Image (tube, rainbow, N blue to C red; front, side, top):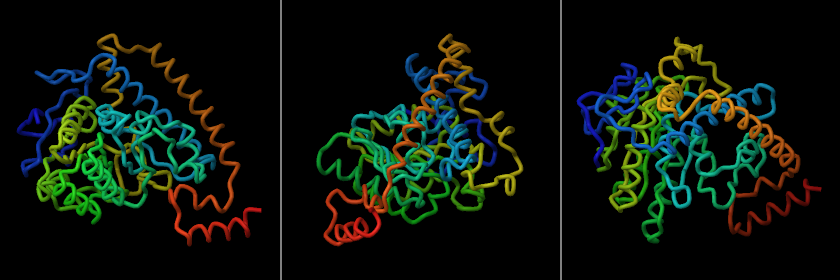
Amino acid sequence: METIKTESPPDTLADKQRFGGHGENIVAPILQADGTLAAGAECPMDDDQVQEVLSLMIRSRLIDERGVSYQRQGRIGTFSENRGQEGASAGSAMALNAETDWVVQSYRELPVLLRQGMPLEQYWTLFIGHPDGWGFPEGVNVWPLQIELGAQMPHAVGMAWGFKRQQRPGVVVGYIGDGATSEGDFYEAGNLAGVTKAPVVFFVQNNGWAISTPRERQTAASSIAAKAAGWGMPSYIVDGNDVFAVYSVMREAVARARNGEGATLIEAQTYRVGAHNTSDAPSRYRTEDGADAIARTDPLVRLRTYATSLGLWDADRDAALTESTYIEIDEAFKVAHERAKVRTPSMLFDHVYADPPARTIRQRETIEKEFDQ
């Protein structure tokens, strides 16, 4: 690993999120909160990549905005925003090869899904509540959304271990939130990844809150990254709002996995600006409101300022992307809405088995006979 280490964490993080010194590596800052590069730092992306990741972050935020609106109108179910965490998710996604690498998601990684090629109508079909929303199209290397905390991590390691044993190309990234790292599945998956040297990256989006429980009350560990020492796995803490630093360390972790050197844990420290999801009321347990937080930490403002200073972005380009994204959102929602009109009780069995066992076939036939008429 060539990632620069510093004696202290990036100064753009909140004081309560500053950790290190227990085996985990601290990634040096690259893009500072004011949109300038840190002293001695170089941008790890070329101009095209800067424009791509900025577009990805802007699209994600607009989709989040519309998703909350749809939920409030009763048009979709419970919805979780990525708002404020775009630097962590988009920066990590940029290091992946969408054709060979796989994403095992949690439920707050929208920019990752978009870069992996997920059609937006797929996203809305899921949140409308139609079974087809759980089955990603062929060629989109993304596992279904996982609400059961931490349960996706053994799947990620198992898939990566399978790649290794079958000598297939590809790296698997298991995304997880800080709250879910207190679950047993996280530890079992980490131990197995360390033993097997599977080509997997554990990417933790530490937004400081496990719904209403602050990070310091859910674990006594000095950091989440420090937990990887017990698995014999290198780990890194990075400012999740510094999209360049996230990309840099993720690129190295992916290369390490691709080269047969095993797993890596990355803890991206960011901030959940909004609610945990649309069923949550953060004002009941958090004093800082979203407006204050976004002004202090916003990774999108940081990157937009940088890109504008280089002449890579301007207001006209921003407006054009906003307009095209809203058109894309609305058209995709119409398609999903029409698709969701076709639904039968037996669809509960869709996307469960490639080759269903006899008992499941019998159950489906019974339901089709009784209810699908």
